[in-house]
Length: 250
Image (tube, rainbow, N blue to C red; front, side, top):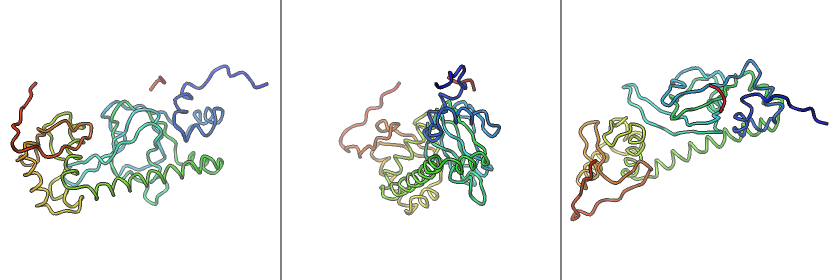
């Protein structure tokens, strides 16, 4: 007969939401949660998790919430690279590198709970559990492929599609249609592999079509809602534009 479990660890149910940790099984996972090399961390929306160049001392599994990964340049301008959510890992790609530092800044996009494992504890799990090892390697490979796909999609998209994608992203992040562009036109041109003048021409065309106004780094989106990522086409020139106003576990 199996022993009766009198009291379950308060974080066990939440930890099992992470597929990698769930592989360990209830007993092993519950024992893991009591190890000194593990912590449960809770972050409020907008809270800083890691700055770029901070040392990476282990991995963090996202139990719930969403984490935004941002890149910033020397002038302090930044761009959202991607978002990761429940079940994903933070730090897995760099924790075993020669210089284990976070390459980008990480922020909590919503209320977020992380389970952090120190490097030594992670190494022990990888050595002792082959299923855990293979799942970890598969997850790291999937993350690398996902990033590569994002880069390829960016390179294949037209200048307008890249601009609308950036505007959509910044509208969601800044909470307004009047946004401050996170990068200069020169920086955007380098990132997208195009000429700076090509970006200026496309912005001028979009302005003439009534989709936006731009003044320096300030841009106001006037077109259809793109906050969910829709890609608007050009407006018919003969159609007039009408503006409408107006850390305890759970």
